[in-house]
Length: 605
Image 1 (cartoon, helix red, strand yellow):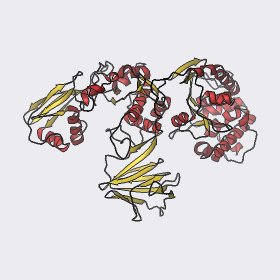
Image 2 (cartoon, rainbow, N blue to C red):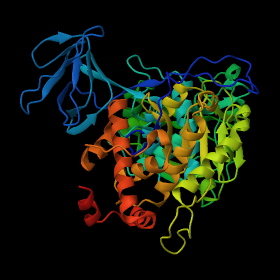
Image 3 (cartoon, rainbow, N blue to C red):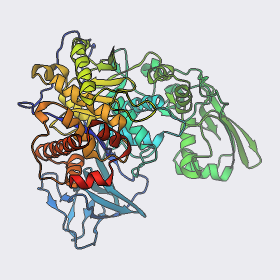
Image 4 (cartoon, rainbow, N blue to C red):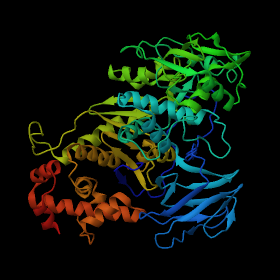
């Protein structure tokens, strides 16, 4: 999912799996929510104001271009290594051959170059122009967007649980707000939520947190709840009315976003800061933002909010919102100058000295406090309760909260408590998987002759096929998805009605067992092949394959059709069964843990 290796179960469903699940025992909410969007349009490089961009080929797949929304897509005709140039001409877009259009649409894989930066995209891109500047919008699946933002906005102190809480807040902010953009839903700057297109070292952790909370947003008493986050609250969070008084009148008070003490943020000491800024620099910053004309000489706090933050400042004879002041200074003089609106200010000659605490607007989730809670063993639910009292995480489409049912060796997560009736079959599937993988001396201090499950496995069943695909980004032919010890599966009632639930879940349990013992050096075909060899008889490994090992790995990781993927999985099973027949289970399991030797590979070839 989203660029990471995955393991899937493919099942012939005798017709498409429908989104109908058992309805008995489902908790309803007062309002019937609209179906959430599956994708978001995200502004690309919005702070750069590029007037020209170069588009070049990517070796991964062919780029296609359209010059209007209704036009047929055609392959981009790159000339050797020459890139196609696209630039803004007023409110129209001019392409390399001098033709003009209101919009240029690209999909496939392609590389963009502008302002010294290069980026390869695999998502649809629309390019328009306004006032001589290019406006670029990338269409991303919602979960891909959330993952990228969590990776961009998180820090090294974050834990699994604090990242899960952040993912829920990021998703809520994206889906529950109007962000004020004409050409896209959200921008990629801190005006909305920061998104580094090139990724970060936290991508893997962000991916796991996003997947574990897929589709979850904040709700308050049956209604979707707006949510924000910031870096450091300084020991007390702010209410929206303090930070954005003009946008949050009393009639729109949000009871889940009240100002409250946060001892977690200051557990390691409060974050304090100071700044010394000249009158001339401040006057230029405020004038540039259209807040106050030059000529003023005095600056003071006119009104404070419940948290102690400045709400309104008096600049000369004018009053302006303190948050507008902070943003204006940040854009003009740097974001490391006025870190928050929780400050004191004093004149010193022709300069002003600020002393403050915290960083960011202070509303909602405090990332420093959330990280401290996660480090102390608090889970995502407890973290959200600290910063959004009375609100809870629930499914964005229905408002239902996820329910967990524990069993021996696994936990079932579902939106429908009626799914608890399937626990005996799921328990049977896990027992079958353990039996087929082989139980012996275990792996303890060395490699034994069997595989045993480690920590509890999570099985999350989604309310519909569409919800499953939106969460995992799995192709249409996939019935279940496994990553680590987390299994996502289509509606249990649907699979059970087709007598596919036990083989499907057994297959995924086998993936958990195998992946738990595989080393990074173990080839994908062997990991998949062992699951196929030990899995359901319908995926037996008895038919000889013409595929080579290298072709199998490509088919497993980059299949574009169901037939191609099925062929690769069955070929992997055939090769794995050959290893089992020739060397025995104990030796193959040892190779699974240490990596396959060249001699065994040569024998297979």
